[in-house]
Image (cartoon, rainbow, N blue to C red; front, side, top):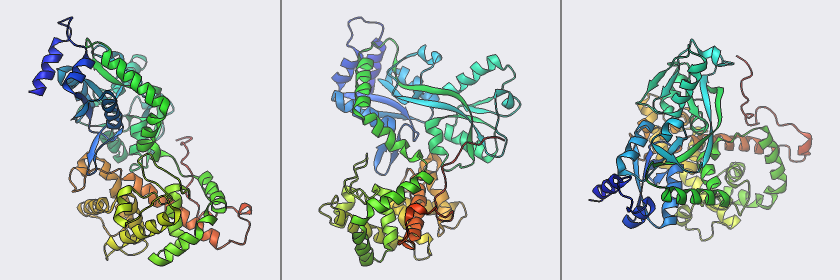
Length: 471
């Protein structure tokens, strides 16, 4: 019945001057119906429930106007606008670029994100220096996107430019094809590429086709501007309040590189912050049978040894324990430094105990660290994927390749515990391994002036990746 009401209301648009505004319609039915797409850059559903940057924004908007959010998810970007224009949704929140062709059918609100449009290639296949260098090579793009419109505009200048359009895939699928060598190039927005590159490390940006491409919510043309204006006010307000930045950090903050500068900051914090907590780390580590330097490395990765640290998702303290974890461990004050450190040691020890007996060190440690970050059930899912792929689920090297796949629909829909931002535990473990190695090196040279030393290459973390200069 409610769906029929929406369709009836949509049919009235443009035919009756006395009809309620779109905002009044939303308020009257008490629901904001939003169409989005199944993508880590928009909306996904995992064991902890729905998430994604578009979901977070739409939910906050629905709460502000006092209605219930109803999400309608489609599989591809080409389905978004037809669904919106069918009258089954009030707005589309799906990472849509503002294009002239789309303006023929929808009105766009205030841009809430600016992305760069990249031409992507595989390292070692020859980096093009201009469009002239790609005219005789294969390009595939997702049909119905601003990426195709970009190719169409380029073809006016380069008539020999050709490409293939695919309506049955997402950008992530085409990035996989480039990584596999099945196609030479594809086009990806910077947000999508920054997520996907963590499990396709050979992919690189060949050319920037557009800088600062705006993304915005879309509203049906002829529906008035009441809901659009209210949404604009909301987006501008959360941008000024810093909420929009926190949402972006939650989903894209992991793209920050860990580099040599980070190593120097680590040494400075070792001298200025760690001394007040070192005895606590040593005591907790002794109680739970953990190397104190590994425990301290976890603490630095989690909070940079700041007892008052709070993440955008609400975890707190030096060891960044969630409220549920604190309750599970029986902790009364997860912000208290000693309580947090002892709780973190206990929680890490329990993750170690859950790792299969067949897993040897150091793989056992790396898997326990990953479980500390993403949850042990997702480690179990990654082990299942490794087994399906014919790998060895007792080795971290295979697990670290499988974990990022938990953010891909074709994999997370096949495992019991669903979607996870699986690249994060891999980066998490790699960072902690680097911090741990540096701590071992520092403690072996504690009587030396650290400022007079360079970090040996075998303990320093990898430098931030630099753009390829030539090919």
